[in-house]
Image (cartoon, rainbow, N blue to C red; front, side):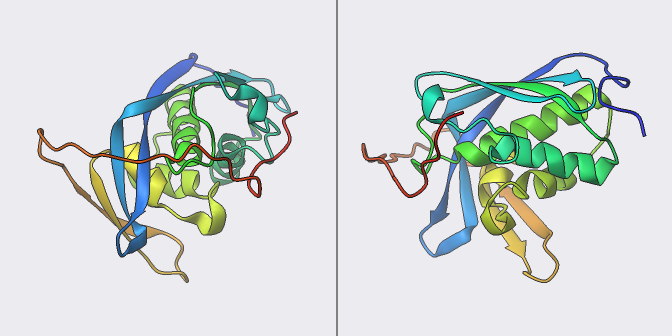
Length: 196
């Protein structure tokens, strides 16, 4: 097995849309990508065993950067298991969004990490594979937010609990469609993990 550093092509950056999900009756099924806000993700291959997450932005101090706890780190562990790569990297994430506000931050960073690693390492994952891997960072591997961040538009996820993977329908919204999303100015203390 080679490591990420041996296959290194380049550092890869992506701007990833956030999303909102659990819309109406579509709990864990419907999701919508948002034009704004976005999260910037940069993946840089590193020697095997190096797993570093750097978060920049207003709420960086509230984010647990342990790769075993951070959604992007979990997604990259899943990618390493899928591709057979032991996987060293430095991942830089820039966001001014507070986690736990319902804007799909965890799905966006997971998709960004897997997308950038896929491009950097030339793994040639298709879109559904990318989403399935990124969704492994979510509780119970829910794909809704990851789908929206990966494909944009309005998404419908049909997934059976036994299979784990799913079929995804992406519906492009009308160009003049606008959404009003209310984000409460409160903190979910049950989800907060201490920063490292």
